[in-house]
Image 1: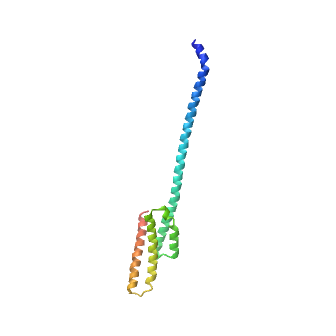
Image 2: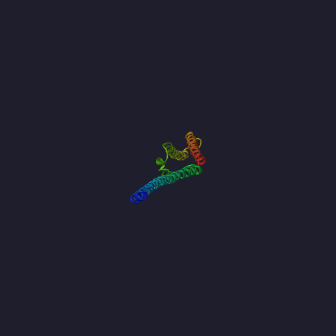
Length: 159
């Protein structure tokens, strides 16, 4: 009797077990593929972040180099030439997008002080030695020069 029972139902039971096994295997592979897809999406997001960081780093570094070169030129020659000013403006043009407003304002102040320094250096030669206006130009010029030199020292210590 038991034999007849297994003989009659063995085929359908085997089919059901095979179907259950197929569903389990298919479910496992679908779950695993979903996990792999999520991991690939996470890797892609990390790559995008890394690429953005790399581009921003290069652009920030170019600003840093432009500022250092500009301040070194002023420190060496005491004034900035037209070419130095042009290179500074071009080199720091992206700073508004890359840094906060405080730093962008500081870069503008460097530019403004360099222009004032150059103007005062040129003006002092129009006065005779001992003239109060010449002494005033020299004092103001020295103030701007010292401030710009201080910025160079700050940039060297904050590498």
